[in-house]
Image (cartoon, rainbow, N blue to C red; front, side, top):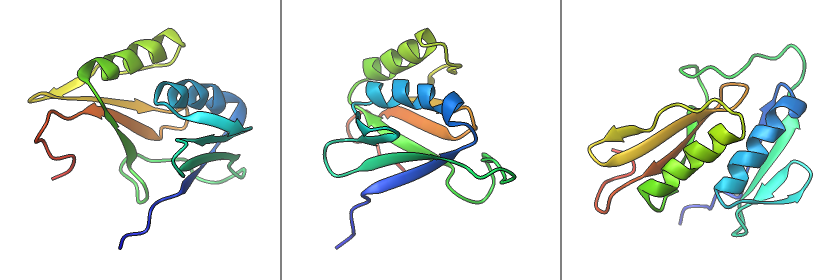
Length: 128
């Protein structure tokens, strides 16, 4: 039996700069805030955000460590809505990528940590 992932702690260089981004994104993805800097999917998974220590290195896209977090969207329109609403909230958001019907939106938080929101047509593998 595989253990369920129950939380992820993300350290950011500036809570003041990063939290508006995460508040907008996590709300759009259906997470709810349970207390300051802690969000849940209401199914046992939590995101916790803390301040990184001064002098530590920042996230690097192709460096060792986590590359990105992926979220499965229920429809292609959901991906478009996330893109539109994040842009409207004032964040840089790239174009949606189309991979033979798979609609993928790769966004970056203020520290460069990447988040993917993707619609997979029925029968398409999430990873391969």
